Image (cartoon, rainbow, N blue to C red; front, side, top):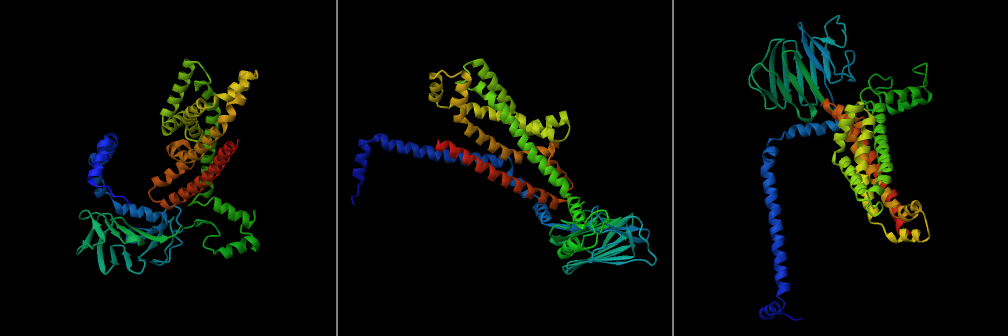
Length: 461
């Protein structure tokens, strides 16, 4: 093995100065580019105040939202009313005035009757897990959690006051204002002068199959199957199987039927919008391709038309068509159609401009008509590529249709936005997001398989 001395290396550098100086220049350029990237990132960090935003972020709320995706809450509300307590539950809750969760101990007055959706009580004791007890009387609330006690005196409709100091898990912005207590994942509590709101969280998705109004609610899977297969009819007008299916589809909490219908609308929006855009962009691309249509004015008009359509974002088109046609799938289809016509026109015309002219020349040499030249000399070259691009955008538009649906263009996007806007149904949001992921995954695989087959067929020729 030969080792070069410094003198030998210097001699080589003297004989080939261009090689050595070139490497130094490349090295300096690399360092300069790296320094520029670092400087830009530092500027962006300062300009957008990233550090301050991260520091001020309410990460506790983010954790609560994530927990809501995989859990549900039971939220009884206890109101102070004329020396007694009235218990009620949120809309679509599994519980109501004549049905209470087992972690609530309720003492009802003698001869009490249920009025509307409220159950009267003299005292309510809630057990949040094994570490928390909430004792509610018409004039006092006692909360025990983690070895600490919160004692609140209530003057209904007027004021609340705390005896002693607030525990670490409770907050109050000012004297007489509402008190918030946080028990972690298990739930929380809000005490006000008019009522007490309790939140108790559980893992899972409550009533995902049957809601609390269904005769199958609360029954085990074996009991449900037994009723469907051999049980007596619960509804004399239809079989138990038909009744069970109707209860699932029309589940008031999860609204499976409406969600599935909106998801189907989203799929149709993506397919129809992409199909119509492909059909219109295909002939217009021949006008924009300079080697096909040798008229500069026609080329420029077609290309500028494509630029106009795709320069306006799909979301903006969706807002425009929502105002024009009203909320619904027609607005979504139109938005996808307009945006993709511009994109397809550009992609198709560029594919046409890069064809091999030898096939066209061969068709002309045998006296083929201009239409036959395009049909047999051009289309076979570009068709697999054009279809492949359309398939990719069809799969991509399935995702985009969800976004434009949120602004009123119909589909599951609008349903998703409605669930998010309530700020309390995040498990429903998770359900719809999972459905969208499954649909996108399936369409992605179908699109990929078809594109690979088209490209493979092209390569085999």
